[in-house]
Picture 1 (cartoon, rainbow, N blue to C red):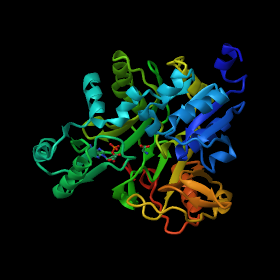
Picture 2 (picture 1 turned 135 degrees about the vertical axis):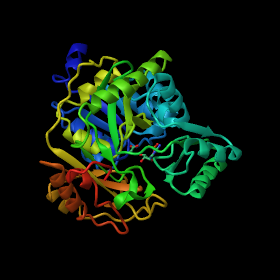
Picture 3 (picture 1 turned 60 degrees about the horizontal axis):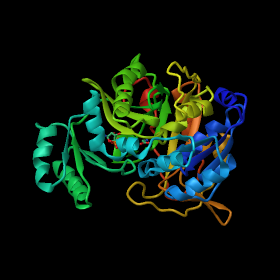
Picture 4 (picture 1 turned 45 degrees about the vertical axis):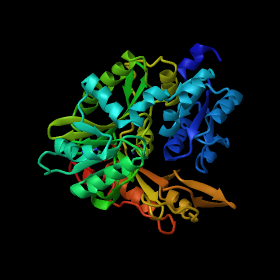
Length: 439
Ligand code: AMP
Ligand code: GLY
């Protein structure tokens, strides 16, 4: 295929390999499949939902050699790496060394997600606003550290494991003893602890696609991190999401680009660590202004489900341009006016303990209500669909406004039968009713 023809992305059919097995990868593949012409899609290892749209290959997410071998056989135009673990482990580096065109940062750049303390260092160097923090490496530093980030003890304590923890390494608690217990557990496991100043205000996730120098933002979304309604219960990987954010201040995306995404990408580039992929900016809109809560080095899950649902521009050409270092800064993506909401159905015990192997039924009834089901943690055993992960399904619905989308997503979720499963019923409720905030 001639290069110019490929670059246009509208004439030729490209071949894409997506690495991952979760809801995010299913959503990416679903959106790629909607491009014209639809790409030839492959996934490794994929999941039962992905298998309906792509050829799946039995190569585990952690098997970097296997991925290089598979890509060598398939000769795709593009490899998209979905999850953080292979990125942090160097999957993009291995694939690039083997001559592949890859959407996803190198291990060095993905360290932005792999180490919260390094992310803080980069933000400090780039002048990016974030919570004040202290990194603690030993028990005897804990008390002084907590006093430094929360001198009056009048707001919650924020205690984070420094490394990857699938969204579950963070404890936000008013109880100093509980804060200390979590920090002790992280230290005892051999990790470092990052103590942070508490950030008030609603959270926003903004995905910024970068080719290492230029940055193109997607539409903002909001994620619901806590397990239970009313933002109660432990932190999870995300229990639901919606987009757009009708309450977001005008100019929010531009402000995030100017104050956060561009300076971070520039700082990394200056250090010789170009970031190619999605810089996920997790933000708090505090009473004192915009602050970064966290960076991730990939699309968010479940935010991707709602953001890509609304993307009307071709998707494969965007990822290809970033992977090739040819992103045009003036790329203007187009978005559906409709609202999208996703409700995550989690298995019994999630997030503390995960029970798998339970049969799942009711998907047809769910989809008959106009929603679609993204598979996050499922498997087929003896021809039956069963749960295979903590977050099992992500039910996505659209509507003329958030209220319509959320009531459709909720009604559809309630058709699914999975013993012991739970989901939140308040995703996007406050936003739909016109109130600012996180629920
Ligand atoms: P993280 O893994 O760093 O994104 O943290 C997970 C969740 O914990 C965030 O989405 C917030 O809801 C909460 N959180 C993290 N850091 C802070 C902070 N400094 N202040 C308030 N809440 C926080
Ligand atoms: N939904 C939060 C994340 O993907 O990290």
